[in-house]
Amino acid sequence: MEKFAYRYLDQDTVYNVTSRFLELLKAANSETLILTAVITPLEAVFLDFESAYKKERKSEYTAKLAAADEVRDRAYLALRHYLVACSYAGLDGYPAAADTLLSIFKRLGWSMQNEGYQTESSRLGNLIAELQLEGNAALLTTVEGTAWLERLMTAADAFEAIYQQKLTAEAADTTTSAYRLRKVLQEQIEMSLSWLEVQQQFNKSDELSTLIGQVDELIANTMATARANATRKSSVEEE
Image (tube, rainbow, N blue to C red):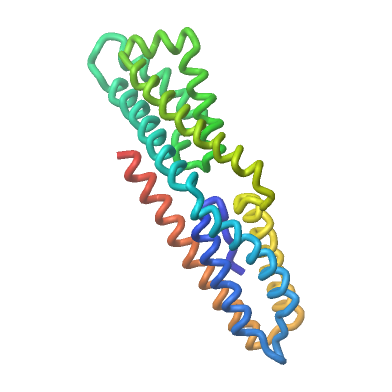
């Protein structure tokens, strides 16, 4: 069967594709193809995820974090693109200094702006720390890039302030976050797919083959769209 690559799927896609997967399972469930063993646990986990997902979509922090993340992404790209431009500049010391600094970006994650909030925060923190080391700070001064780093630091700090506010609010909330429930949901989806594969191997039927074909099509279409979106976003940001 086709497989999900969850790193390409955002929260909205996970919600929508699981909902559609459940619809396919329920539509195929019959006296001759009993799918209760798959539907019941998957639906239970999905309903928990759905509750947290919809609650977080309405959270005041969701929009604030998205906006702050956009600002820090742009600040990161502005610094990176500036250094790329400096690497081509016909100014004394610029190309060598810029190339050295850009090697840090490549080592820590050239496209870190595409990562999830926590991963991006960690990598940005490491990047900023390295760029502030004495030798690298001198190279930034050489290419007159210190102001671009300071803008990134301001944007990163602003994002982290909002993120910490969100964590504080969540700590007072007894419900489990959609992020954590998503991991449980993904595990349940994989168990459901494995169950279908085993049934296809030992209890093959036309009904089951039709269902598996529909599920494969769902997964293939979902991943094609997700990968295309990721490629398109990377292409735009590399321009």
